[in-house]
Length: 402
Image (cartoon, rainbow, N blue to C red):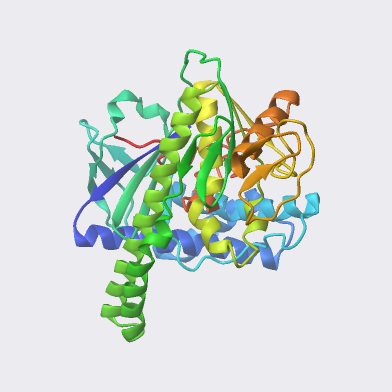
């Protein structure tokens, strides 16, 4: 399953219709969550029936396509199912109790409620929200796919406009010739990663670079009166800067992950728990700015696509152990050079990358599989038709359209 994204061009009244559809989808989802809270133990079919009663009770809900209401129900039930699953697994800490959405940014349609034009450059929405026909701006070619392959259509609102996303059922695997090379990667803050061959990729630090602009626009927001039109405009400009930084980080990770996967047959990397690492408040901003988890997801995605092996290795003691003799050489974070009694003298990250590769080659490790996480990249992964949200499609724009 892949997702193709296009910029939506329309009139102001059409954009208002999209906003109304998004608010309605949020209303249905929140009502389903409330219904589950009042009657614990209800299933997905009960929530479907509740959405039907909402359509009879509220005219603005009835104006939204029925398939979009069903998709909102599935979003609600996915949070409920995830909560139950975390309770059964006895996940430490918070279990992710379902919450009400306040600022939903997307509405999803199934196979009804929309139609494509003959040239596949326009899409029309047939419900009573007043969206009408939107022009699609993008470089993807929808003619390459049959209409039967399009299982979902989503309207997404961002700071720089509105987008249309198509969920397409297709096979993304590509056959590639073996290179006979293996590589281990050690991610860091000084360098984005250092491989087992001694090569390193610099850390661009997109957030640190854009902090000056962020502070400027944040001050503008603070000076505006709450609820005013000028404050909304200032918030939009601030959101555009954040969106630009996010896209820069994503494109950087895509370029590196694709290059690494295509150049090697086996790629070993650290099985880091970024969620735990960012609890260190001294390094949290730098870790989030690096985007390690996003890079790992893309490595696994391209590994599946090109038929390469990706192995996640336990990072314990990979920086402390010597890659030559295996002896433990304790060192602090400030010590950047590994010096062992056996005569091995390497950069700290280079030594760790070699250890990661050796562990991956000596054991099976944990072979990475592509699992889309909607909260990691900021995009909501849509549901596969006829399945719960536990089965997700690949995240938006896994590859650049250029």
